[in-house]
Image 1 (spheres, rainbow, N blue to C red):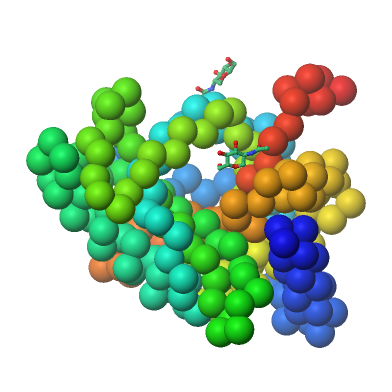
Image 2: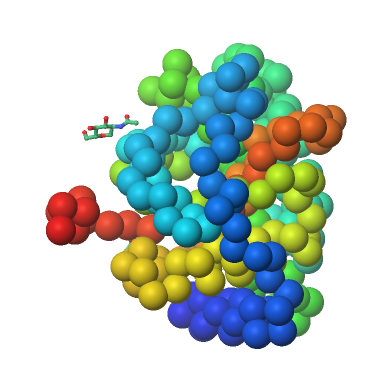
Length: 229
Ligand SMILES: *[C@@H]1O[C@H](CO)[C@@H](O)[C@H](O)[C@H]1NC(C)=O
Ligand SMILES: *[C@@H]1O[C@H](CO)[C@@H](O)[C@H](O)[C@H]1NC(C)=O
């Protein structure tokens, strides 16, 4: 089923690009440091490569607090639902009644489904601050994800995330990766174990209007040895 979803996504993406709906691949799509990360903790990463319209990062070992998959037709609505749960969590609605510092980004992992109502599955996650990573307070309905070393292909865009622009930006990222070794690694990871086809990373609260930074992430596994070639 995962393979089928991947296929379906590529089909949709290539249709979009064929009819010229994709945003242009400009040089300005990566390399902006989210201003939010000057104020609150963000996960650090190694920059592996800057390509045309994308960058490749490696996150060594990050810890995320995640909702259960949320079925919805709208990424924006699902993210709001999930974020509310996570916001309550950091305010102390957890087993230790402990407050946790706000961090960025908030992730929404997207897994399109084949259901009759065109619903997709969205998992919303909060980056657990380093100080809480050894023992994040448990909470009902939330689970911890501990990522091993993970590679991410990234495209940045600004403004507000909408259900329409995420699809466009994801398609543009996929198009910019076409024919690269990264693209092959992403395909391979999706075939092996797709828990998401792409992920939306948001760095701003809904109340900030300026300097908004969002990213599309495509996650993949890669043996470090390949990078030495
Ligand atoms: C990630 O791990 C590698 C290898 O251990 C190390 O060289 C690098 O500095 C680490 N990067 C970050 C951002 O922690
Ligand atoms: C697939 O992903 C799940 C959830 O991230 C993980 O628990 C599982 O070990 C993965 N399986 C493989 C074969 O990588």
